[in-house]
Length: 179
Image 1 (cartoon, rainbow, N blue to C red):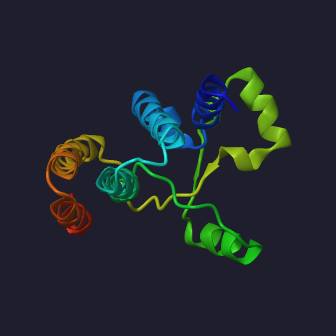
Image 2 (cartoon, one colour):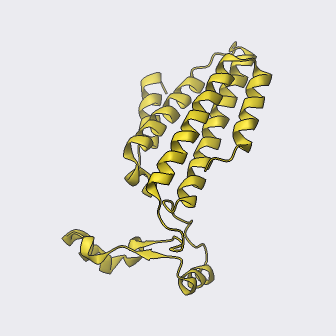
Image 3 (tube, helix red, strand yellow):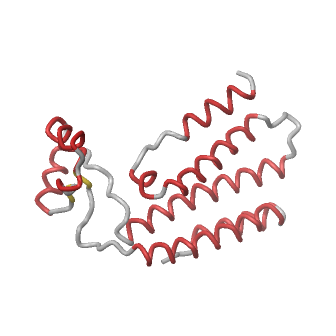
């Protein structure tokens, strides 16, 4: 596979919307997709003589990106924006329904195509979420802004400082609660 085929396949793989986050925040999802694509391409092009400290920094930056994604998911859930994972078993589904931990899309908001499709696959219109957690979009956006500032500062430390200090910065980022 040559370079252009690799870039093309990576872009296709990461540009597929895979969850409701992509629908709620398309620009953020596009930014993350681009970063992931560039990371894949950069790793594919590394020569065998790639310096060890640079490989270590790249690993720390990649790990930082993963931790950031986990923290964003936690924030979305904490502020009532994220979805709970779908039930894995019929018993778990029944329990969630009994507990009322779901939301149904408003039928008035459905287009004609959606309305007809509702009868063929009604589960698509159920969101697994705890309705007791109210959506707080301004609170989420403020917390996300803090997280992004912390992410940028940590990334700068990983890239500029020596590897040991970069690892310490990553561990500090992992342990910091943002809310």
